[in-house]
Length: 408
Image (cartoon, rainbow, N blue to C red; front, top):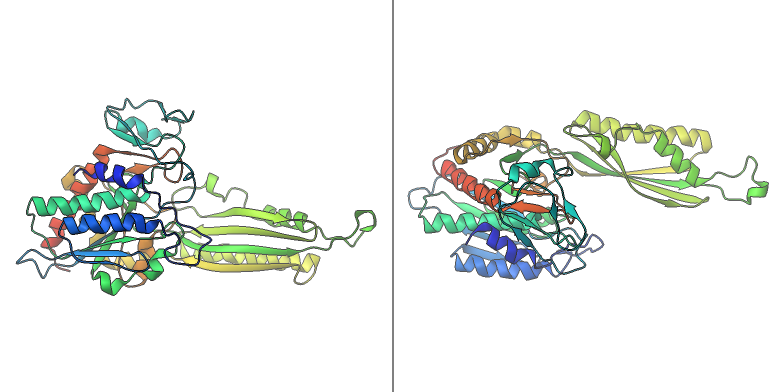
């Protein structure tokens, strides 16, 4: 079976995670996909298959005879999707011989355009899989799942020698909670890769340092007709706080290694207001300076408006896995070599976000990320190329071959 055929089957199964839930998995629907994948793994004669109560699906391919001493390499993808654009049935659309130009997404009125996505011109002649413009496609990360199982099928059908291979499909990546329940010991890999990036050939091992930051603003609400020197308008204080942040250090105006402050939401009235941010930076020192900036603003405005007028709450979320992966750079070097053997140009780029691999790296499983070939994630413009998925499968097979004779 082709990787894209698997994706089409998985995509129609809705698996949005639920950020408001305290359980794991956060949504029961993720078991719908997990049970299907378990059955497919059984048909592929994957061994040691375990589907846990928390919706983690593990399996292994024992080493080919004579390759038992090779490093155990793992491949991981997540089953959940974002919750946005999931209200209607998911209907993937296949466009053969895509011409690289504007493409109408069903009858939605949305247009997939090279003006919005310049890489589309490079997909001219490919078979493109899109949505009908009403939902996500779910290639993030069902494309990764499809590519891993297709790799397994090729290894077995073509009797390709390999060392120990570990497979895992996980819940709740999109809400950042799944990896904390990942059983590294049960998984059994020495090293691993997440299949959760975008462009084929993309290799990522540097992610943001991340925290959330919330301002709790206590105003003084009195009748506006008699408020001289008394009223403290919490909403105006919220505006003042944001005005004291660097104007262009926001997601819209940053790229690459540039960090940002991102205002997620705000609410309030004269008496009380809240501001919620996420703060991101690849550089550890710059990340700390950003948090210090928020503390300085709080202290400055409390001196101006009164002690405890503003409360700042900062919560670290995850950290840059670069320092972990740099101790195991064979993971990147071998992935580059696998790309080159497949005819792909390796693209080493920073992740402007987080990944399960980040959390797993800090838990003792070095785990960079590999692109799946998809684009436009988390919205109705999501799309992926059949040929790109095939290339990713070929690249993974080459990676397995490299590690079958590699010694750490």
